[in-house]
Length: 124
Image (cartoon, rainbow, N blue to C red; front, side, top):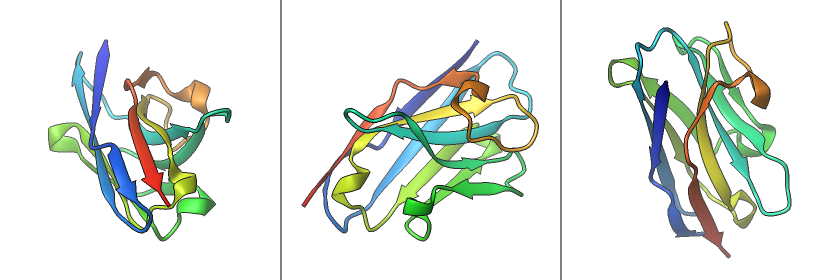
């Protein structure tokens, strides 16, 4: 079983930045893609960004392009989400997840393990 532990959430003013981290541990980790999802109150969970094992393919949701950057350090089994120019509409619980699917996916059901979530709140 794989455990994912997120950190880095918090309260920030509009225009500010936060960096989320997600460390994976547990059973032997083969190659996997990683993603960040978020869920705002009353809304469905949505994929914000995803990255393949090698980093050769990256996905960003349109609303975060140019502001968010996903990256990973495979030696540390850790992925990151750098969030700049945050806006109130970015307020949500952010989840990291890993997928054993080949390639890259933004489909929630194709992710196999999830973190506990970290709250990001952006004040106006």
